[in-house]
Amino acid sequence: MRLFHHSLSSNARRVLMVAEQLGLPLDIVNVDLMSEGDRTRLHEINPNGKLPVLDDGGFLLWESCAIMQYLCDITPRQQLYPQDARVRADVNRWLFWGSQHFAETVSILSFENLWKGMIGMGEADPAEVARAEGELRKLGAVLDAHLAQRDWLVGEAVSLADIAVVAPLMYLEQARLPLGDFPNLMRWFDRIRQLDLWKNTEAG
Image (cartoon, rainbow, N blue to C red; front, side):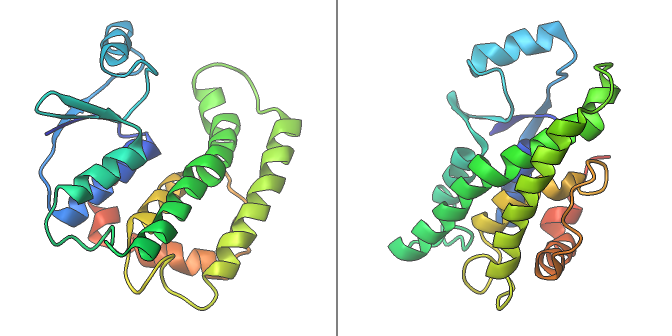
């Protein structure tokens, strides 16, 4: 299986963390998003022009959470994506929440506080930063309350839910994410950072 990847993409890192935990070898194809040729080739395998993309013997799958689920479904006796319908629904709840709300809000702050200056688009927009910070604090409060009496988002061990939600926090410091005042969230993040699935997928 080949994974079209960029080391700075938190969505691509989600997939790497799942593969690491499952012990699945992936042939990593690094895509240079600054290269017009690479971007053209990326559009040929994903009409959205985004990473990651999995190629499993010609079966092309894009969207990180769909790839994560697929990798679990083809791995016998895996524990990241439980079979019980209600537990799986709970995991799915956090997959969708993480993608639709949490990661989306983090991406605004990552763009404004980190990438914008790096690609020559000027200074951060203070109004946009303030709006995103306010929204992220609300989302952080949801996570913090949920984690008050538990170590993991779902069940008694790390699952796809944790991996999906935690990935954007790879930019906690660089994007100046306002989450330091949520102790349960930060303890959960520190717990994940001690796992091989996090340590072995860090860029560079």
